[in-house]
View 1 (cartoon, rainbow over the protein chains, first blue to last red):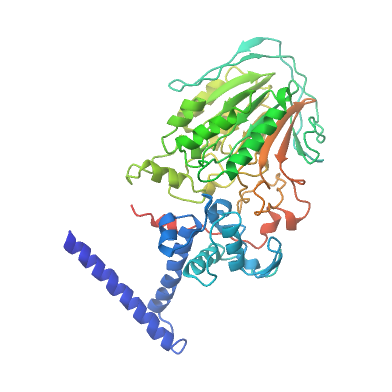
View 2 (view 1 turned 60 degrees about the horizontal axis):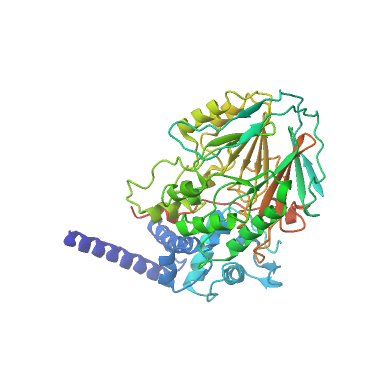
Length: 152
Length: 381
């Protein structure tokens, strides 16, 4: 049993190393070579990994919050309780003048406003991994929406 | 005062017979008993919408619907989603406000129906807290459960406090029926060896997929419904209370009852049927044949309108202000007056319905396309 677990861990480790290597090589030669299917799959996996983390954060998963070192809510409310499927988040409308803040705002500003106000949580660094993951999930959930920047 | 005329009344009458109708399906229990009187009723032709029978608030919005028997009013409160006070007092404050307002109306209301989701996670502490808050309301109270009340202990605490569903009673010429739309979910937990808390956690996520199509009546309850209406004159009004709507609005969020077709088939022969439901946390109105469906507000928070399936008869509520916990929530006052039913959304704000798309809960979603989530499809079982 232990041997199997070790083999599994080694396989996962090798895959991750491979993925990182592919991405590192691609970084060095970005857009200088045609993209093959494996490369595109690696890009997508890197994105979807963030989407899944964001999905868990958005739905109030305590373990993910702890892992990321964030407190998105102190009321028991999770983002998804008002925004199932990330509806009414309207990422396609940002940046825009945001009435609640009475200022020009980005989606990240709005995410932090929701964390601080309705959720009574602790505002997160706009460039943090948690913010990027939340942003990834919200955009991914709203894919196909028509860009309508600035609309109230 | 804003008004929507939703349907038309019908001419009918019955005899003044005293009856007692407190039945339950075999194998199911109920604590509900009520002596009722059937009175002569004369239902007018076209119902005229508008105006408030009670003038509780100047800001009420009225939706006039069909028929009526004798004039009376009742309150609908649901979806309080209480957490223990140690976690969140916000929902407690809003539920308290609704119950105080219902209590303040005194004898203007004949009874109150609590339409489910008293608790957030089915915790006995949450349900006991709700039971305590409900003591504020002294008029007769009826209860149907929501999924949040049920899946920690499969309704044991709920039934202990409030009795089992389904049930029925007759009141002033109307047959009222309360159904259980939450307790008949196919087993998604045993094979996955979920704990009770894990089962409840999945059930509590509106856009989760693990619990699947959990809302349903089941064959046994459908049989009970058929039987519960077998002695009722088909021209007389029937009001059915459910947590989830008795039609298909948006299945991915269980904004439906999966066997709604069978339920509607049973209700179809009756000329005046109204289904009043919770769960959606938003004003909704739908018609299908002789049936009409009214969605109620939550006291806790508003849900957005679903990305598709909003009935065209619905006039959408305004966009709520997420910075104001008391915005876009409230309770319902259903009154029978002048042979018609008025649904009033007792929303704690000035305007209930939007007059422009930019302020509308549906119009605002122009250009929005939504997709189901992914993380719950990676559940580690």
